[in-house]
Length: 147
Image 1 (cartoon, rainbow, N blue to C red):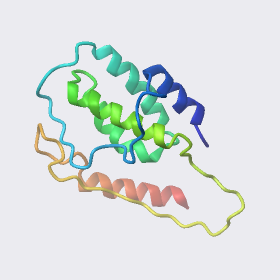
Image 2 (cartoon, rainbow, N blue to C red):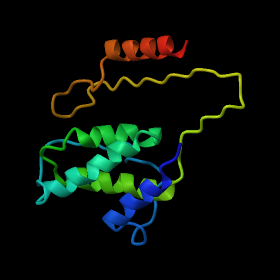
Image 3 (cartoon, rainbow, N blue to C red):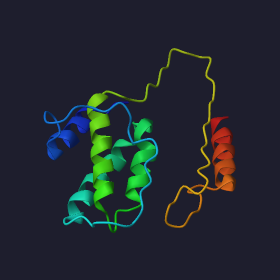
């Protein structure tokens, strides 16, 4: 499953096809977004960009965390959120063909589940973004659905 053309369409709509260089990572490593600072003058532009990015996460698991983090601030986006969204787009530009590969040839399937507990990940509330209980539920549901 690939959304290569869809990724290129997003880059064309934002004008990032030729003007910028690609990045190797979907988000700056220690980026802490807070709801403080200068609000965007045109929040509709940010919201309009988040919709296709959320849809792109269906086949691009490498950008899920970044897009989920940025979409939390869709009601009142600030300048750093926009800059982080452009960073995600630069990453997509560097790897537009990332996809889910569903092979029917290989029979020995293994299940690998990753969970990340982000203690005090939200700078506003100083709470974890996902609780341990929620992560255990996710792992359990994944394993049950696998059978």
